[in-house]
Image (cartoon, rainbow, N blue to C red; front, side):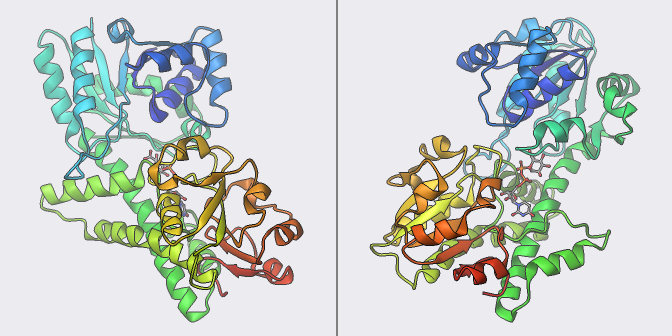
Length: 437
Ligand code: UGA
């Protein structure tokens, strides 16, 4: 099968490379010439484990290619995926669909035969209807179908998630488009991955419902963590205790500083806006967002309190700034609020992250942060250590060395990666999330 992938962001690049690895012929398109030049040299613009090998391997054998020339990529394609950004629209929080619609029109104008235009970008329910209208208006002479195929991959484990997903959701309106989509995903189908075919609007809404539900689990357990702290219960045991009930499930019940990233904050807001528009408000999701927004600031207060209530003239070592491990993505990272507040409270912040420092340096909230080359460099001479992201290398710190490097034995662990026992044994004042102090 021949595929054109429009947009080489996270979803487009990973999906393109994985489809090529399935054996399809994939051309990835982007308007950014520099990005395409780099990709042609196998230089990957994002940090994603395994992506470099996958891109280079498939490019070498000729199944994967990159271009800025959209019309040439679309000609002869069986399916064209639209995987461009759908950021929050300034002012109202609706998903900004201008890139999706512009791509749909360009694709339709370039098409030279039957093709399925597939939205892979996260788009609000009913967007496919408008894409179809645009496509039909641009090319009344051609038969073009519009499908929805939302992507559920996570940053940091994107390739594994794409190649071994729990399910693939595909929204189509007729049998012909369904057959094209089935052939594209045949390698997964053979592996018995559930391929869920639905109507198009259903597939679009499924994506938002999935992200909103996962975000709900996180805000829920974060509120339970607050209650645990007041009552002396342990949120990790509570999470285990409820998660073993298969109706609840154990995933996404890790209490922490709140969810960030390029998806949950944006998608919960967009869902709330869509629901308002259709007069079917999603009040639970509204509450999820409020709980999450309020949480980030409170996490900074926790660090200030652990330091005795004042950070004037104090130094805080921060480990991890990315919104989660295995990524350099800083979008909506809780660290942005937390570090900003620490600085405003008078602290000097020394920070280290294995991948995200380059991105963090571009963000105003981090101005004046002393960037370090290792965890130990960050904590040398600091008055407290705060762990904001659960990178594996922070899980095995030499605690004796940590104790010697810090001027005071204070650790605030917002990801609960150490046990209370080991911290007590080593003599640390240890503050974590939802567990007894
Ligand atoms: C999320 C979804 O998990 C993917 O299925 C979806 O495809 C993607 O959004 C998207 O829509 O593109 P991602 O944003 O990469 O993926 O990251 P997650 O692993 O879901 O983590 C999101 C945030 O929730 C992070 O800040 C993480 O620290 C936080 N989190 C996650 C918790 O605080 N507790 C948990 O138990 C799990």
